[in-house]
Length: 422
Image 1 (cartoon, rainbow, N blue to C red):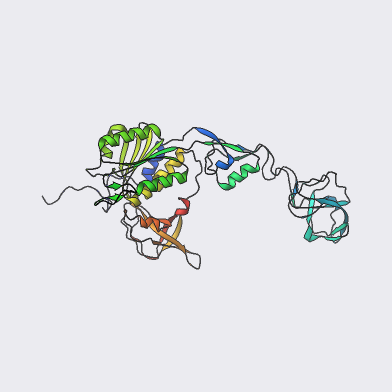
Image 2: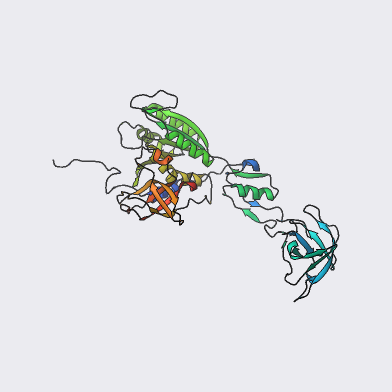
């Protein structure tokens, strides 16, 4: 024999029998559906929750005509033409929250503060900087127009208008908008419950003494932190040994108590990985080889009807696959219709980056701006899939497309800032 049979790996120039990143994500999104349960929460607890029904305004905003500036309210019929000057008697002063009780006469003006309700008979406000005052009179010229500096009732929002649609993930400005309508409680999607555990005899829990040949579990903490930031309720099932019986028991427990299950490790071709063996018995799972680096082995499917994500064991691969696959899938399950945009921009590479065509690579990078305002990016050091510091020191993914070859210094690359993800 002059050759041996080998299996594909992420270092192969051509990876046969694999899915592209886009194909894998498409399959996942097609296989998950939105949760339908809801609950009512006070507005103080509503930020980052997902609206279960649209918000309809019960009032006009603003609720009354009011002045947009500090100045003098008057009837526009008194505005002078051409080079003339008009002088009106000032009959009082209006401040916000204290309306003027009489109708303004045509030959009268009244001092008015920003936000104060316009009196009957007035339709125009002249800024205080644009008038001359003397005792109880105000003088102004012909530079003004009817209706200026007046906010009309319902100008911003009209009564009965839908201001936020179902599926909006509430941001602080949107919470403030709801409060401005006098609404104290909102119906939101119930937070999804996610069970998380790590696998492997070589994985140590925090607090255990170091042991030769073993590593401390970081994957579970990365995943749990990402899930909590997303607003999920997390069940931490700890570390499960490489024991088929214990693994099966854990999957049964997780599927009975959670909407989604996450594991890390045990989804590759290693002979000691029992996760795949157990999942074949208790679930309907696809074990994919995705043409990407890091993160080639990914498992996805359902365990007793519960959505399952089996992420790789290497720490960086866990985070890459979570943000590229799991995050958009979870957003669909949560009912988020318009997720916050995770922007992608072009930046100039400050170094050479080795890349093989035939796979998508997610290098960890440090994005910055030059003095002239152009974006530039460098890698955050060694890029091995087990080097978690490459993620910790980075502020973006350098996304190198499937068919792209190596990057030369000065080439433009696509960059995905972490600010849109984390």
